[in-house]
Image (cartoon, rainbow, N blue to C red):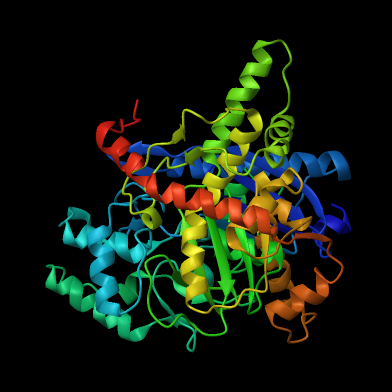
Length: 535
């Protein structure tokens, strides 16, 4: 195996539609990638993924990466400088004492936890979102689910996979902050809120439950989170080429790795991640004055407080329309690559008239910021509007960012300063288009760096490199922000787009009409039942 591969770190991210493996050199260069496509299922009214698919997807993504390394370097990799695991944040994975899954994985997309989230938010004096692990557990307690008495451990998807690879039940502080509130002074779960939760659980019949015993241990970036075991190596690489022993960084959620991928981990910086969901993260100098349902308080991978505006629905509806246009081109005898479809579709958006009379609701699932427990994707236009590719594309982008804009306006009203936002996600590959609409939606400059295109798998690989630097002493005591700035982002190229007054005015007009039109969305939810997608 070459020296370059031995010094590289492996990042694995389990995203909403794709499991990706990314091999990254110490200078941030991507050496190889691999992937596996998967989808969630709606089972008994709850969104889930199969854990069998988790294992199969890990192996498939790693095998593709290992094959790429072998083609380039003549041999499959046998070890790495470090390994990191990232995944979708939040949700609920509950296990019994023997490590058996008690109920199917409940993902961030589920919105059945309203009673629990409201009760805990009032009891804590701290906003608890519907998708947080603690809300899922408390809702199960309220509902009297049979499995609650047998819960021995709960974790996130990243924590679960990390456990498969290391045998350790730990979690990065950023991901842990989406399970239960973090005390940024102690760097672990808030002790007073832990006690309050136990009291509320007892009031609902779960006397004796101690949530502190169920949660994984918290680790900050650079800290020890275990090593790859023989069983973990065999899981990733059944061929036997990969050997145990590589250190793993603390597992993180996709929000934290998105911050790392964009270099936005210092106060007054922020990032937007646009995928199946879409969310904005702003690193705080101090927290908001009052709790808000639209704002989650989480942390960076280093443990600094972050205001997060999370929308359940992101680019999926736009992707679905792009697929339709791709099918149409193929039916005409001119098949084109997906990126070419997006280039043609989004590339036209900036030529559209400012006020098209069109609205898009990208709600495949519920959207708490919009007050919806369920969603129905909708495209609405006035009879006098002129339907064109350009106006349709612009409305799609405006609709994708509308709920995010609502949440961010609450944050601005709290006096949180934002100097610039850095964005990443597939929709930004069409240069300058989604970036410009997002800048108008946020009223702040938006930059897109070249590294951001690799996303969370690259970000968690970089956190692996930071763990290696701490281990071998080359970090020289630098915190994560300083290390990123000096080692990876000092010369990083990024194109910033400043919001144009005309675009801001057009988006404001769109958003006002979009908010009034939410009544149409609510009517569609009531009128059109959502079918269970099980076979």
